[in-house]
Image (cartoon, helix red, strand yellow):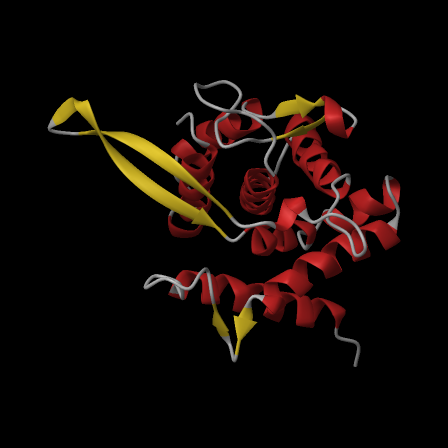
Length: 214
């Protein structure tokens, strides 16, 4: 419960599978309370690999902030949200929009990354199981920037051209990582994961529907 990846995954999964689950409110509060202000980006609140209320590294991370924004957006659509919850979700969007991922600039927010999640072995709590998690960062940033509130937040803060540039850069990177509809993580034996293709196709489909003009 101190890990952003774990909390966002469980929250998103429960919202789909059991939208009436009593645990949803508590999970969202854990995520909201786990945001941290980043002085490097106008003190906007964001998320790191570890929640700020837990143990580990809460250093700002684009992919974890995007995951949190997507999870909170889905929670708002299913459960509604109060003013504080909306403020934190919108702060995450502002943090992403303040990033360097734009055409002609740096793209550090869009670089794929990995993390290790440790969990105690049930039979022996003194030992831990080590899970390696890979993040398709550009896909998550694009998904966050395509949530319902992203355009409005951009219009009120940095302007729509900045939002469009950020989103275009993220989608372009998603598209650029595939060849013939197959996405590649690396050149190793596990270099073409199915989940990466699913995320890539989902982003391109949603973007195509969003920009389509009959």
